[in-house]
Picture (cartoon, rainbow, N blue to C red):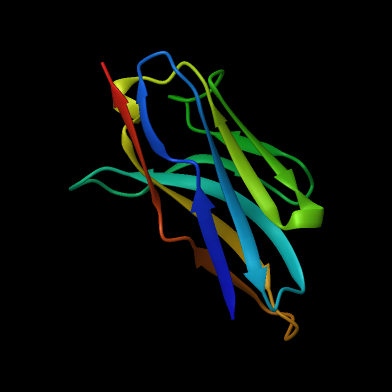
Length: 120
């Protein structure tokens, strides 16, 4: 059983910063890519940032230059530093990871989501 638990969401004024954290726990053998997605009510879940096992990153155009994804392999954790936040960044942010347990097969896991609200 693998769990992803996010923390760090909240309410912030436009121009402010937040740092999201996500820790993976459970019967983990290996972690491949980890990333962050977000979703607004009535909208589709969209990629915000992704960090691949080789170190390459992918960012949504809307957050490039403002958000930074990082990872602590020793802690099975991924972080999202969000700077210069805008009201349009308001969403529920979900942690995502491709994780294998001792069985060796990689599966996709999601966290429960954390609300980020940016006031104008």
